[in-house]
Image (cartoon, rainbow, N blue to C red; front, side):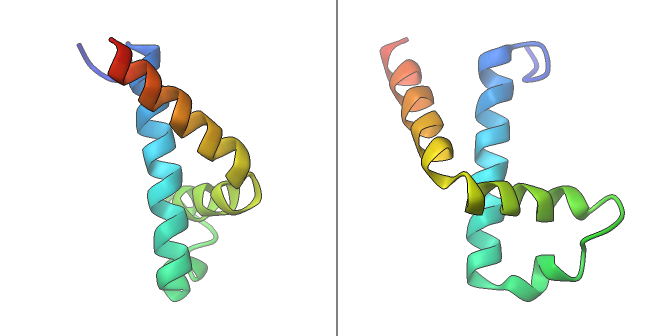
Length: 71
């Protein structure tokens, strides 16, 4: 089954995208800073969400990890 049709998998993909974009922006900010408009702005927005809502993203990652390990 595709990640688009399974809510748990879709949530995992979104959390992984947010965490990856935040890490890339923290490591090399020039990669995402010049892409604030257009189609690639999704990655910059994910990095911004990861920076500003990091406690909630971390809690979401822990919940998804526990849910994945228990199933």
